[in-house]
Length: 233
Image (cartoon, rainbow, N blue to C red; front, side, top):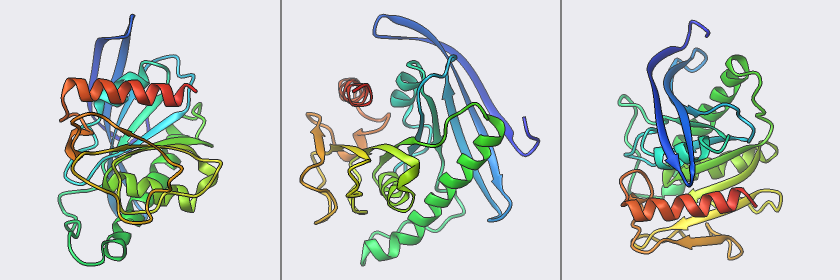
């Protein structure tokens, strides 16, 4: 492994998914972007053999990249290479919550897009066997906004997007990119963000914050089931 990467943690554990047993490897890595003088922590979930696309999970503001393990584990168990990027650092400015949110949050989304590009470039070096030509993006809240901006700027690099109640950045109107949206019971997207044609799922009782590991077991199981059905089509 390249000396620039510091492995923070390595966990080997066994789980059960549906009727199959599987062993997953989960590891946290610090990647350092010299051009931006910025640390980009990532968590990787994988199980050999990797025979399905790369999935990049973008966390919501106030959550961590490790708080989507209920999605990451089940996808990794099915052969996907799954990675969660930590976009917000303790030294960063807080995400604005007042004013014209589209305009004042744009630099935060742009930073997230650069994080994704940087991490994909580093993965090509350390995991050259991966196919990074068409990735699947999953984003919760602000992470979903980052995902939508990335797909809008680099549509040729994205095959599918799963939005976990993202509400600010307009969804791409690109017929070549499949989009599945999970909505929440306590939030609505801004006007014009979500096209009427977008497939939307509302899990009973799911609030905005429940669309990560903090949700109940039943909510997480329903999200898992819907994501698997969507990706396996």
